[in-house]
Length: 319
Image (cartoon, rainbow, N blue to C red):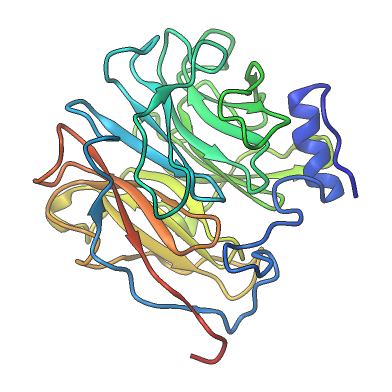
């Protein structure tokens, strides 16, 4: 099937999801297996100790909300470092291969970034859509979710002007941290409380979004941030300062479900290999589920908040 190119960015997004051309269509993991054809017997090893992404990418400023491309060669993130249009902006670092070093990050430029706050990038599985949050003019309220589209998934600077996701998803409150899995768009919002952030999901139905619904089993009395869904829809990571977090700071938590579209389990902390007494927040899973990027202010970094990555192996069925 040939997917549509051009036209309204939002229409392309919605048509892609509806026809199978979009976010979950025809994608393979780096090992060559179709990522969306996951089996309930798929297993993963434990997470490795996190490694700082390095001083080439990280700065003396705040570097946060990372997102890795499917091929592992483009690392998107937010930063308030000098050289941007606002504070923060979206940046991208590139590398020629997954084992090669990162090159210096480049600002995504004025087509995507604004004079306001632009952050929390999320790439659709097929690489054509870039979701992010912004308080730029034209939104519904505090921070809204926006989406930009590109025809060439190899061009990290080929993004078209962003469009607002509209009032079914956005509210007069704060929305951020989008994660699209199939026809489910997860994000965080404080629309119900005006203060603490919870996890919401909107369905994607043909050419429209359904209204945001609170995901009660993933939400808490604390701030629950930036959900990230594994390729098979059975695991979701988020960060939270809920009861049980180390020293009351943001930690990374994990929840699972037996089948796509089923209820999520009560989240559990990811453990002390990943979490510390410092802030670990805004997780992003790689498209094959084997790498976890996040932001932390733990000692040993380049500045205020740095980007880190941990890895795990995808095990053969039955292990």
